[in-house]
Length: 216
Length: 344
Ligand code: SF4
Image (tube, rainbow over all chains, first blue to last red; front, side, top):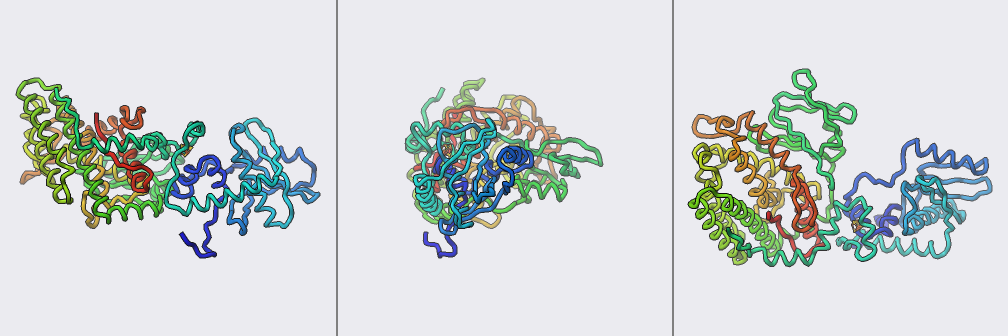
């Protein structure tokens, strides 16, 4: 689909995360609008209090912005950062809050790097490191925004843009990746079992007009 | 979606519903009759003159919770619609398919096959449970004829031809349906043919009312997945007619409505006294009857069965949602076939 340049598809930052987790999930949420209350959004003062305590441990003079709107016109991205620390030495340090334990896939890192790219474009200053804060374990994990991550963000943006402007929903995860379905909140909507049974569906549709003769 | 939320049915005329914190309060004559947490509710279905506070209405619109108003006999009157949800691309696909005569015919055939196969299932179960040899023979014979009718469906090259087969099949089915009723009940509920608008006997009144309840659920299911309930494949488009919801209803008439109706009368839960006969011949459920039917329907929706495709325990009330989602997936070419719900 061709879009005029001022109508370019803006990708929400969280879509990158969803995409890395599962392209189908990304499409269902951002392409089909299936999921209205986004579980990801961090809100509520309670969580911010935790953030404050955490920030208090770092050096004095750090200014902390919560739920900061960020964007990149160059990439066509926009969203919010849970927390961005502005340090006295000029360092800009995004922190992403995660509810669960550490996951086995690095979609969080991708999203954080995307935030860094936005912050760089907005401020004109380099953003070199950030952190993922896991609320369950109360641990911070530092992420250095290296070239690999930056490249990964750029290619993910291109892929997500292509995905969201297409009309076709990607197939469900399969093989070893399918274990992610277990903790996916969209499972009921996605129905991986139903789609996975495509062949069975086709068979059934071929025998649709052949009722079984199981008369008593 | 994984969780089957309840539908709150309010039949008491002049009841007033209001939002209290995170709950719905049902007030009758200034008295609090019921208080239900909002998060337990997927939909509100209101009969007659039931009023809603603006705050509750606003909240339902915001959450995408459907509010439907039906008249006493279950006819649709109005519905609350929040911001249009779902996806315009999906609706485009739906419209394209409807315009493509071939594709629409394939879907319509599947729908009719689902309807007739599920009807046949009711007859076969009746035959297995029949008390007399004569009833059993009647039902087995009808089931055979219905099977022939089903095998003919692929030959239907036009929607009209298909509707012809459907009509013949439905007639066969209804003709033999009294044989599923228990002997004494058959006399209390004389039933010869389907009559609608208005129903002219008690059994017709009962199934009409149940169809209306299932239709409201089918419509809500389609809206939830973002399909347009007005554009159908089997049912022609007409202003104000929920053609796609009527299409979806076809699969569920026999397993959700007819079967429940038969159980209710066979067990004596519904009796002739639960109906009002009006001057001129119309027959309608009365207040007491409607309450019994709604309660039974609501309980039935909570029961589970093993879904033939998902192979997992599924609440019966979720079946229309699963079919609506499967239809959406088919229209978006996510899967290669649409298969109606087939009752085992
Ligand atoms: S259930 Fe599995 S396939 Fe479906 S969206 Fe979630 S992770 Fe992806």
